Length: 585
Image (cartoon, rainbow, N blue to C red):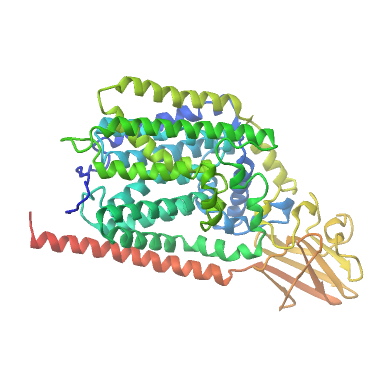
């Protein structure tokens, strides 16, 4: 491929050759070191641990009932449920319950981290070996596996979904750089690269939505820069096609999550404490714990910026020289990406957080460390390939990574009974707390009781503002014939018109039928509890969680995109074979 851009062209290595086995072993061993404290301290119970753990347990319970891809979180809001699985990307809450099929729950977090970080190291090796010597690529593998941002997510944040998304970033940016012509594709099949970009981009979105937003803005910025230096629209056109195909592949999640936001209180995702303005680097607020954590994240972010800058300067003198490790335009691409990530973590960029679509839902500006980490490990590995100051930089980087790990291990929260407590809550029928932003419109889940009967018959003349949720369990109730996460069958026999209050939040995806006729359920005024009016006599009530039109549309788009990706891949292979016949070199 001819281009005005300095392209890096390394021969492709066969599977498990050219350093793949050392990279795998290195990533695996470093991952084991990361989780080693789990075996004597318990589980690192960071900010988001309970959210992820409860999701995993709920999915595992629904698998036992034959629901392979849950949409409704049954045990949230103390058994009233919530549509969490419509809005939260599925890969992490599908992976962890799958691990629980083979190992006890207490070891699932450690196994999740080892699996994801081993993959992250291999992803970094696949990225770095295209541009660096093998030894430097292996160094990049180790650094990315134990990068400080990942350690922060593991020990302090327990954000397993974002950790999974960050594991895809090296592969994602490799595909972007190849499609932009900055890094040459060894096969020359740009359609294959486009499909690869779309697949990895979809995987990021299906792992973590904030990571998906950051990936979208990063690739757009990077492709615009590539188009500018190449003086060609080709990078933008191909990149736009790759992103569109990636959104299409993830549409079965993205479309319902976007459309059904109108049915929940999604604005709570930006409640006090979660606003970008409160989380720029070194921002202090009235909450001491919040400020303490923000200072930790900010210090790590600034350290990554400093190391990235020093390493970039260290390799700058090699640019344009024969045998240079880092060609000029590749160096520029990483510098541009570093500048974007750094700028968006600083308060002067607050206007961008206000005006750029959906950027505010990233919530925490320091999250851009996930993007910055890619140029960080690359510049660092490239700098360590130079002889001058090699050992000094190596010692400094090792001290940074090790020191970060030691500090986080000693200052996080450890709990060796977390899963036992959560499983006991589900077994007892109490469930767990809900999530503010997934609360159906009209509900205040803080008004819902910790214990409530599944179904309660009440006279029509009773005040329904609070009593459906507060009637005690010993009073007569309707007969429950089936109570599953996505279907409820109740039989009622009354002598006068009445109403049936269910331990269930009203949501548009619930289809309610009374004696075979569809009706529109009501809601308690102080909560979103479902209340169903029924006539005198015998009634059979069926409540079923249905596939809404937006979900159907999302699935159709994903299937169409999968077919398009397949034919694009096949077309690229045939085109390559045709070129080989014409020019059999």
